[in-house]
Length: 396
Ligand code: LMR
Image (cartoon, rainbow, N blue to C red; front, side, top):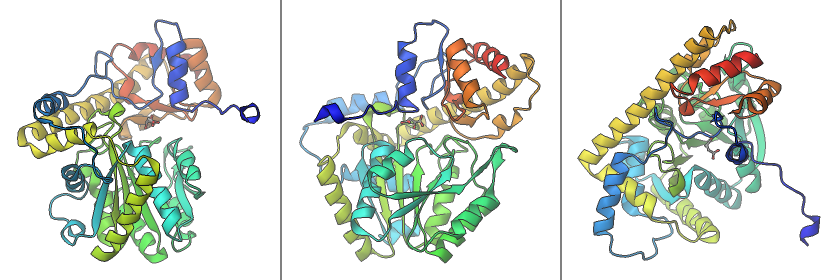
């Protein structure tokens, strides 16, 4: 049976990491996958995480199965991070959260639950969007439509086009929204634009599905949840898939969550029972370690303060790299205006480099970026900056 199987194309992001690992050049730089690197070019475990792990090692008594929805204390902590204290959806018991394996696992559970139990069959995603979104949603049998988001000529958002496209969506359609630090463009909506999107969703009866993987990498933990909270105040139903891969540096723990917000407590309970059934049919129940780390940190005032400080440090280092990148390109004689990169948010920048230029960067200079032109600024350091900018200057 396997003779007929066709070879799958390499993944546009993780496939690039495989290529990078196999590259024997010593001055190679991986700016493909979104992984935070410190000034030394390393991705160390956060101190708050290490301390929580030490505590767990002492206090954990069993490796018994978790319930289908995971660690209860974790799920409550997720809701507090998403909605803030005292949000009406939490107070009115309209939200239920299930721990899930990373952002991808959370999105997949959400999508499969929707397809199996609701009329929602179409999801609108931004153009461009994270390279894995289509893969996830197609695997769950959703039909994908795109709304325009980005204008290449201005290196900026095209909000009018987004509004026009979403206005043509049908009642019951899903809309994938990036909570903050839009991947791949790094361009986010303003507060008033979030209100406009909320109005459209309400008027057109669209159901928002938030992909929220970078909370704390834009302006701050609460600031970055502003769009989500605006929508949660406005619409009766929404879903959130969030991830702690980046903001806790827990990449390989695969720790995220899917949260359902319904019109009332009775509806959310029914929906959640089906979310649990979806999880049971996929991986039965989630692994514990990542959730225990996050809930230990968030339940302890000192650890939480330390985590917030570590997150701030990551955010600020990336912001500095953006400025340095723009300056170093100038020093390398690039006359094209790249100042838009310092206005973008989060781990990524959408460089505007063409596929040919991206290929040359890799083949001739060992600088790896995603084919779309997305650069992981989080992988830049003072040390590798000259190599990166010299390479870009030479392919422009
Ligand atoms: C990315 O966009 O680089 C990350 O979210 C990692 C991934 O799984 O693609």
